[in-house]
Length: 113
Image (cartoon, rainbow, N blue to C red; front, side):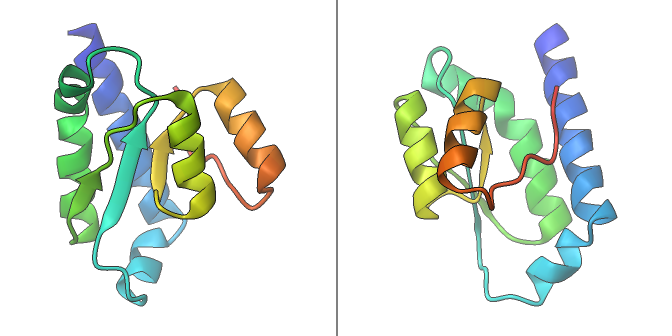
């Protein structure tokens, strides 16, 4: 129950951030036809994907486009996906974010738990 509460809290923050920064309007004016999402693998990836499904559904409804879950196999694969542009949105720990941000200062964190 606590994990679901945390996921819903994150989803609410993410959704509010998209609206407050005008990202929804920007997405509608660009050529994106899907959003790619990944997270640092902390346990069984299928279980983790299931736990993030409420967030994925909320993002799909709010953005009006499909959200594709990219199943990462390591911390490095998440950072590589973000830095290469293959992933649009990622849940990463603070150390991973700092390393990725040093490589690409244009990366922005928009929510934190």
